[in-house]
Image 1 (spheres, helix red, strand yellow):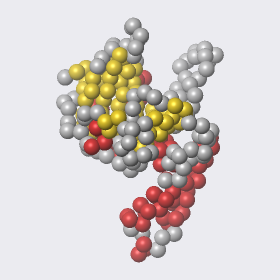
Image 2: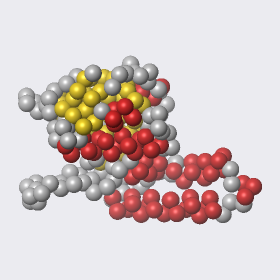
Image 3: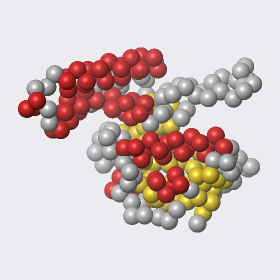
Length: 236
């Protein structure tokens, strides 16, 4: 089995939290792993973990810094990958590959992303989510018993979460997914880091090849915008 050494114990803890959230929505979840050298000599590598929580119909992406440059492309069980994280040692044991679900063969492009304007500020996004959650609960609670079916609740959810955000085409479900996966929580600031430089930009919306990507310092959520045209299709 391949053992990856993470850049620090914080990377291990954050990756474990992400996998735990994915497994909350799908106990049999699979994830696709892609690792590559970071670029500069002595910079280690970068591991990207792709998952698809079924409740949100989005692709979630969490990256982790590696202590050493590695090349890897594999689809594995999220549960087994979580079991292979040793936070004390800062290592990750990659389990045996599994047959990937269909989404694992269709990933966003690696390059060509351009920034899209019109995304509301973080506090405005938070208020928008809170109002939408309250609306769903109110409409669900107002349903008469004979209409309180899964199909009707799904219809209400699709109506609410398919609304677009600000002056963009990003569906609200992408922001909801980012919050549920822990991507919108405050970024940890290392002790003594105050005044050492600018903090990372909170949220950025990017577009490339038929995808929209909401990027935060803690992870990204990507959604397809135009069928199969322009997608990056690679072996799972």
